Image 1 (cartoon, rainbow, N blue to C red):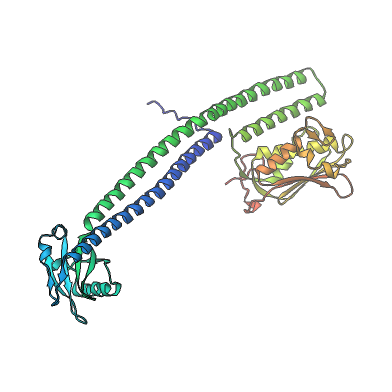
Image 2: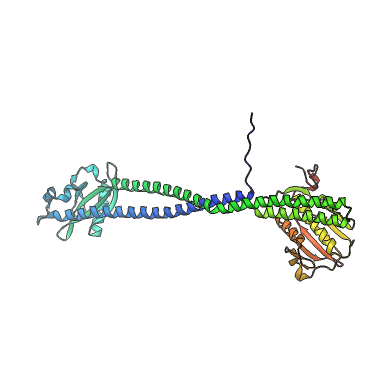
Length: 433
């Protein structure tokens, strides 16, 4: 059976770009959706107000026109004969006449199509009193006795100087509400389709915009991989040549230092470009410092005082930072062989030398790449120390040592788990799970 080959996982930088693309797509779609929702709400409200205004105008005009068609004679008799031939009356969905003598409940006359189409008696009484209070046409929404919501208009019919009757005209809201609901559904469907289109267009445009960045990342990762190979190979060969020719220990130390510097710079480049991520593990900081100092070519003048300390960190990067601090103290801390004291306490690594120190005004500048304790140069040691401290959410600084000299501090957050849990080791100072 053939084994399936798994596709290589994308680099962290590529993964971040892809997350950014998805975020831009979501942002583009969300912005479009928000704008469309606002427009849809405005359109729905305008349509609702327009339909309500149209219904009010229709029933109000019909009721007012029919109120002028009927009349009271001198004997106080209400004549409804004109309604039989009036087109306004024939086109009304619901039509009724409310008539009452002063102080009495109105009676209902000439109901079209039937009494069940009108509101109940209490509601009719409220409409009648509203006409008396307003002395003009009133409009209300009320349910018919048989069910169904209607919009009503009641216009007064004058009997001399008093209101003797009212023409009540109603029209159903169902048809208007159905059309309004249909508009809402179409708007919702249209907005959803537009949002989907916007998301697709945003995804396409963001992909095209990020294509050069993805190509650049790929080229950068390829360059770093090739640079690591091309630089390490001649350094290894150079070390073999130096050893074979019996060159001085100083030459071997320089080659080893150059190899470590190249390795550190390449690691930093890969981390800063996003081609690689820092993997923090629980480790014994005291053991890591002791091992790092012992591996230095000239560690005879270095003394280490350490307490058991557990931190979360990258062993290679922390070892590089400690190595840079010690080598910096050896180079600038006085004559060759001058003592260097390294101490490890909870959350702190200090390296003390007995040199002339660094002026207060220059103690931040020496952490900049290309600046050394003696002035401008090609130094990157302390710059790498501060960079490693920042990756571990820590700090690095220089202070005056008690009694003279310089004290370099590397502060790191301690792991809350006790140091005694380090029962197995996967590497120098690494605490097993």
